Amino acid sequence: MKQLFNNFKKYKFLLNELVKKDIKLKYRRSYLGIIWTLLEPLLTMIVLSIVFGGFYGKSDKQFPVYILTGRLLYAYFNNGTKAACKSIRSHASMIKKVYVPKYIYPMSTILSNFIIFLISLLVLIGVAAYYRVQPTWYLVQALIPLVLLLVLTTGVGLILSTLCVFFRDLEYLWGVACMFIMYSSAIFYDPAKVVKTGYGWVLEINPIYAAICNFRHSVYGEPMDMQKLQYLLIVSIVSCVVGVILFYKKQDDFILYI
Amino acid sequence: MGEKVLDIKHVGVRFNLSAEKVDNLKDYFIKFVKKDLHFQEFWALRDVSFRVEKGQRVGILGLNGAGKSTLLKVISGVLKATEGSVTVKGKIVPLLELGAGFDKQYTGSENIYLYGAMLGYTKEFIDSRYDEIVEFSELGDFIHVPVKNYSSGMKARLGFSIATIVEPEILILDEVLSVGDAKFRKKSEKKIQSMFDSGITVLFVSHSLEQVKRLCDRAILLERGRLIADGTVEEVAAVYAEKTKEEEEGDRRRRIRRRRRRREKREQRERLKKEWSTDID
Image 1 (cartoon, rainbow over the protein chains, first blue to last red):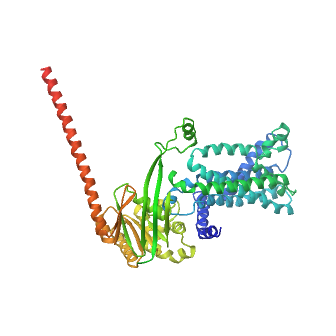
Image 2: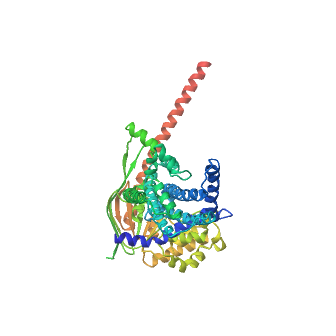
Image 3: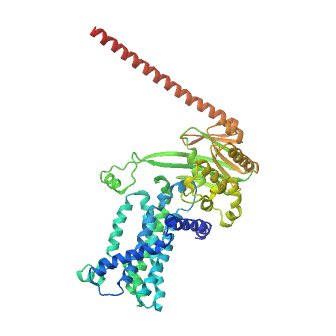
């Protein structure tokens, strides 16, 4: 354990550099640079509000806030896990030449996506202010679903980064799975309607929905749904433990497949 | 007897060679259902043991496919040995394929930090040596240009400058570096020579006996993954020369046989042709 910690300290600078690289390069070639992080969710929110708010005649005045909260959290999970899928393969040339603990690569992509996600939350602050959502002390508890979402993304990301080394086409399958997760996360519809149709269990087993739901409660100034929080906590920790074990067991074989 | 810096005990590396590479779920599933998942075992290294003491300069000789690169990968920690143990004391700097860890979109100066971090340097260390690296690489203002616009010589120069900025305990060299133009080559050779003189341990892989004789004071010889000779350069060089001769002998015999076969075929063809033409006449 102590050795692990020392090892981590030694490579902290490398992790820093890789995270910095991801963020820097993502926006280097575009004129608006980091502004895109803010603009992209804003534009998506507008489109989704028009389609699902306007066309379906939603009466909720704060509907854009509702969409944006769901959309931002889902986008982080989606981007983080998809980047983790590619992380080992895209760093193949380095892995083959220099010894570096391999978890650095998926970790750096997951962390850089998290930082971009945190920056994109600025949009939410602006939009929430515009629609006059009153900030309350409940906002502080928003940290809990965010941290758990990071743990969950790390776990799932480690599992996927390991499996994607051995099975390249998993990336596409995961894309399909992500689509399913998106539609079952109640990003742009009212979950009560789904519950009525009898498919409520799909929402119940979706940990991303649990995170989104509790995050929304915090934004709207309501106490959290404890049952969902418990579920999210368990899924996050289990996926993280499974991810770490799987990654450590298989990491020495990576070089034979990349 | 000096201090041991490298201790390799009974190291073996096994690869699973499958006839075709199965790297996606679809193929794996189909092959699994058809029970068609064969793996062929191949030992790239087998039962290799040797020790290197501080300050020794070891040449690693062997024909193509003897396992030299695999051995270096195991020593540098990139590849894990299937069996046996490798103990390394001190910092290793591998001078293999310089600049392989560069990010193409990053500028030279950003890559100094990235590559340096990968080699395990601290930020403070790179900060303090940054000017020295830039100066040695002779890149000048190009240091602020993305690496994708570099020539291969520039990339190698930068890689060399970053990798040799530390004083490593163990230096791994794969072939003699031919970095950049004649001037830079001279400079890099001088740098390596000065590292040699400071008494570091060197592992040097080469096909050239002459280079090994010039640079090393000890040599080992690998053949098909096994260590077949270990001793002074002269001794091992003699064995190597013999092996190469044998191999060449084999090659020549094969070549002669091939030539003879070709000649026979040609004669046969001409004979047939003659018979045909006489038939027509």
